[in-house]
Length: 240
Image 1 (tube, one colour):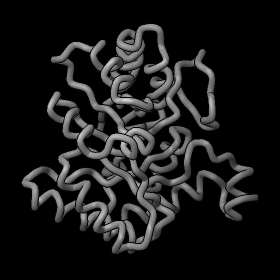
Image 2: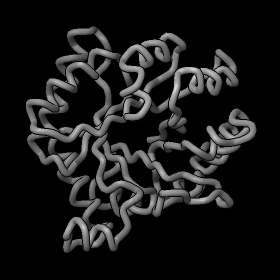
Image 3: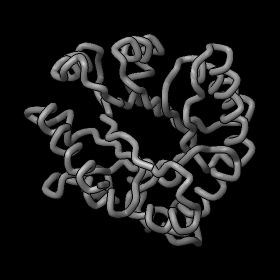
């Protein structure tokens, strides 16, 4: 499956957000990511405002709590009408299953499609050394990500958030009928910043990513619209 190139709107204020997205044609169909920083400052109204513009929303809050708390939180998210949302796979099978149930119930109450539930495997900022020495995992990075993805799929998730570097192994081990949404996407000449496992759009397509998440290479560009279209063209061309 081929999904969108998602713009990560990692900004601090409402003014910054609309200053950025107002550069795009109002008729352009965008998928945008709202993360913790902005959602905690602005709340659900910003999601409604972006939905009113016709955008698809990836609400990336990475819920990780006891199953009942996550279920009730996901009910609220399910009512909003977003397209994607996230939990941490490390929360376990019961939490993931309850998250999905909360989304289904909330969406049904609101009369909107159920959001796709994506489980975060290992953050792209985690290095193999951090996995071994801080998380005390005896698995390699690839084996850890595959294990978490299998857990997520068997628990009802629709896909995972993962580094593009693990996608090939995931597709072999977990299957093609699953979303592999990959952050850490950079043009070849762009700094890695705090991402340790990155790829270009063409490389991500070659690995088999389903959708891309791109932040700073677009929102920090001198011309964000041109940067978006350049990366989108590379992504779409590579997937043909």
